[in-house]
Length: 257
Image (cartoon, rainbow, N blue to C red; front, side, top):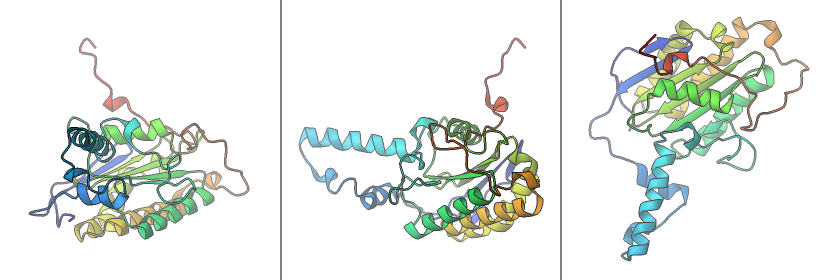
């Protein structure tokens, strides 16, 4: 279950926001239920043969890469591998931690934003990241790897929820940071998302966050960002528009400088 209390003050800097919250007591791992619900395996843990054991171990390793990725390449890209149906999606939920109805609502909101604005939002829901991975840096790297947002305006937003780590990351592209600066992201998280996360309403929290982003664009975004009659441009190889975000703060520092 999701936590009931915030653990510490949110972290906000340079076009991103991070929110962490305290875990609820006696929370139980749900990896097995995710695995079975996804329909990938049924009884691999009951097999007694050596080959079956090895196969189960390999399957669990692959599952861990999906639910706890250590590289951006390991995150399922919903534009290329949609979970529900055959149409490209904006929501990556490899562990099926959201209901199909919640994913459909998020998809509708992302489509609405992309239809009305020269902008893109990608939502990623994971159990957690690998232990040695910085979530804020990972969010920035994933936005750049996929290229979320318009390649000219850099109006991409990546919303990443790490349920096992009780952490919410919001990263904006170069252009989107003008309209969604840290102060605005802080308000979105605390007023629109945190109350639902505290109550265990994961899907509702994400939907309210997207509605807040859309409302902010409607009230403060430059007029030339509106889609109007402009046709959606050519997609990059990942299925996004090609937007980028700063990553200098996450690069290794040269000790000689």
